[in-house]
Image (cartoon, rainbow, N blue to C red):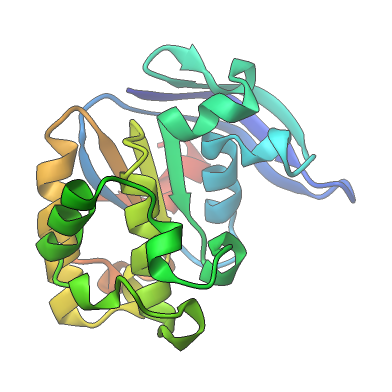
Length: 208
């Protein structure tokens, strides 16, 4: 499902961020990737999602495959079909004034989706009235509506209370059954919801 082969990333000021990363995830499910801040988790997420090198022009060596399709060879307008991502800062991904403008879908699909995580009351809200966590939920749903094969959540659950965290995990468990993969990034293992398949980022860096 996800194969990373000899991935190395160097920033525009020649800082080596990732070096010779090899990793694979063959099974669908929800994975929690945890590790100290500043060690390259977000850079890895940007590389998997195609942000590097399509939008952030770091030097990238190596290959990343999603369902045997190389990310580097995808056109920009194809990326959203395969990979979704929720950034640490939700304001970078919100472009309209109202929630219902961010979530483009038919009424029934959208209603069912919002009801499933109990946020139908947000549909007509102004974006600037949402909390930090609510903004991340809106971006999560906008990604879900695109039906990507892989969805990456960068420090989403640390912004949510236990109630919404549990609702979203249960929703994602059903969603990934359709041969999809979710990777949740957090700096600390104890910030990840229970029941995820845990991955220690240090082990990826060490090649173990």
